[in-house]
Image 1 (cartoon, rainbow, N blue to C red):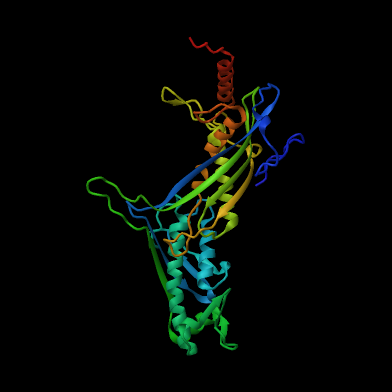
Image 2 (spheres, rainbow, N blue to C red):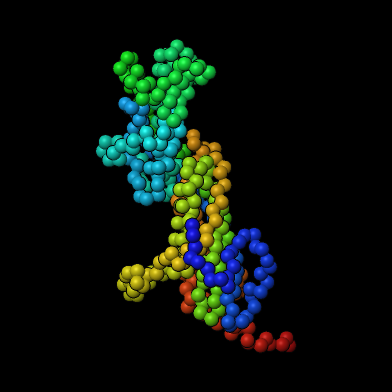
Length: 369
């Protein structure tokens, strides 16, 4: 993600730091101070006290295309692209050969809600299970057709063949034609993925709330103007445990988008009510980050597969939001030595904290009796 152009007098942020930052706390009113802060966070996926689940139907159709029917809802996070990639790899076809069917849950299996960082984790695993069942049937049928073991059937990018054979090979489209027209076989499968349900303890009410957890750490570098209290986030380094990555570019986009939202949470977005009525009813007063406020974001993907799922995937939609505000607030403290305890850290609040700090430093200490 590109940040706004920095003036020539500023250096771009880098991590690890290239030079000591001891000058940051120097109290000069005409100087901007830089600081860095670190924060960590975790986020649970796939509720278990109330079972989470998702299901799909899969059909290997004419032309070698694969139909996936599920109640998935795309809300802009790119889950449809991810599901196409998963299905294509499992079925041995190209992503453009995947057709995601009508998501009306009156006609297709329930995928549950789009939220809670569950889409890839729940529906992606359901798609993988459904495709594996369908592919198992395909291998059995083609193994019988060619007179070989099912385990020797391979498929990739729209072609299928017998491993080690130079002649037993055909396109998936031809294979579907052969199975349907000559043998009356339609390749279908279904997949259901559920979280491991854990009942509440009858006396204590304890249970395992989530099946999997996403962990992350972020470093933020800020510049604080001690004349105005304005804080600019120059850079964020975000390292997150995302499990097996289906689409690295999408994951990085999720992290970058979350960081931008969290910068708004940390520094700008302040919903105010007076006597039950909002005084920030529109974007003229409820301030959101713009492109000029977007820092340089460096994403680090920790790809440790989740052991409790067929795919090993996790999620990153919401977890990347968790550490950002803490890292920014810690960076403000590192830069100017004030601890902000209320969000957002607006220029007015930062300036008030700086004035309080200076007032406290100017009061002479009483001598001990």
